[in-house]
Amino acid sequence: MNSALFRRLAATLCLAALAACSGSNGGALIGSSDQAAKSNSRPAGSCAAPIFNNFFGPPSAIYLAGGGWPVNGIGAPPSVGGGIAVAMKFVNPPPPETLCLIQVALSYNGVGINQVKVALYSSDPKTGNVGKLVPGAVWSPIKGLPAYGTCCVVQSLVPRKGVVINIPAGAFWLAAFAPSADKTRAATQDKWNYCNPPASGNCNGPVSTWNGKKWTMVPSVRAQGAFAVYPN
Image 1: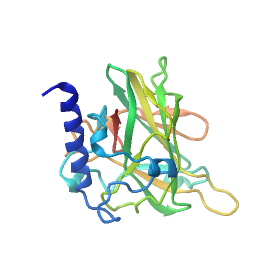
Image 2 (image 1 turned 90 degrees about the vertical axis):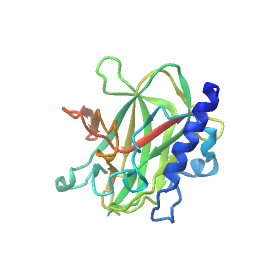
Image 3 (image 1 turned 60 degrees about the vertical axis):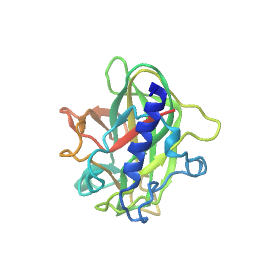
Image 4 (image 1 turned 120 degrees about the vertical axis):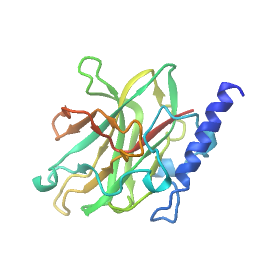
């Protein structure tokens, strides 16, 4: 079997395993995405094998439903971590790729508007922390997240129509942001569900948090939020 065919077969099997997981929407793989992502969703077999994937284990252990990183809008109380965005680091080994699909396990914690923004950043070559925004790699608003504590609905995000998102070889950060408080509503409280440590061989990795002013890397390697990145 040639290598290209093998990569696509591996991706199809991997995504099929995710689709087998039941969720609050009756087992559908896509929990929510922005309108562009909905209208341009791609069949599983059109993506190659993942650059990064910590959705391992049987369907009931795709991600940890009862634990996750807080993703709160500015104005959230200190008791829930305050206003905080969070980013997970991954590495794309050579060769360079273009993005086909990102899947991420985000959930709504019941406060504020049920919404989140996801963005992809390069890694700063000097600090190793979150660097520059990858052109075209912002998905917002992502609405209708599943309730925190339930399993297993993920958000599936694809490039907007006509947009090519380049992923050179190197390190990247996938980040999630929640809406801030305003005069009409409280700051949103979301969660980025952890990958499941017993089931995921690569569950731990670098994490960075944003307090509205700067990114700060978490001092020790921790369980990351669950996500996967697929190239074309």
